[in-house]
Length: 332
Image 1 (cartoon, rainbow, N blue to C red):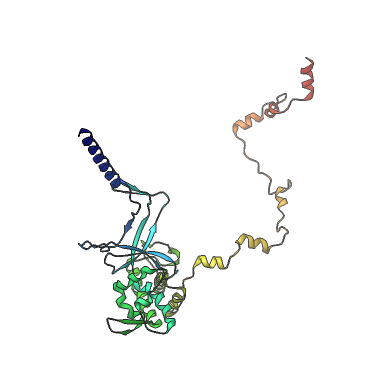
Image 2: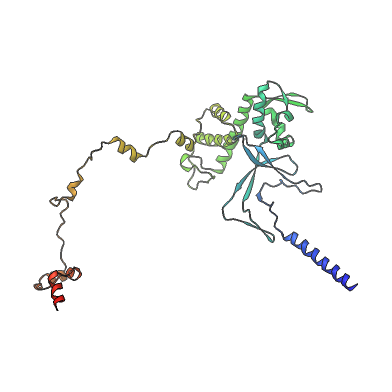
């Protein structure tokens, strides 16, 4: 009985140690996210937020998005990551030190590419058929987003409230985008954000000296921000619809039209012969290179009056001895 009791106690200790090891083991599926209030709603039937891959409306490549607990809002996820960074979460260290930032996005921007593609059929199509994507099956979550009720801003609508079909309308879409741009311009002016070329930056900077940007500069800057969620063709039409010049991508221009350095252009333009005779500056007879006599100090004047006959110069002590002197030393 004693042996059995001891074995039972040992097994209980092992189970407790294993449980403690599980609780202290770091969870690799953890992230630090900055998100707006209300994304995670606390309730009895709480649902977890969903991280999914959707097609980005501009690049048409996979991008990470996050849906709220109730599925009514969608957020774009951007990651800020440094090479040497980690997080300490409770009593564990999270190796991945990336910081995720969730930004709310209008779901119509994500639906718009599918709606434009469905226009080729020439028919009114329901939203579930429009968002039928084998590569990105999670896009069906956009059905529940609250912004879907505003589909009439970008499409013609047919049917009752229970069953509606949509068809892309380019004119409505441009007017809807104009409203987005004008609203964004108002926010940029309110926050006094730099929008001029000289202060263009990846981050928004407030001006302490005042902002002298014109209305057109604000309009161009805001349109460029909205274009980050539009296809290249729709972005061009938006700039034309607003009557402003499109913002040129500096990197693209440099790659498309490479230019030679100014120094190289200057060398190609000139002949192979030198324009100036630089040998004159090394000529001993040149008056430009003659040094002007400098004034002597009192010590130098006194030293110049000393009789130096029979004295050896300091340099002679560091020069090689003459052959005659060497022969005399050898004969000795």
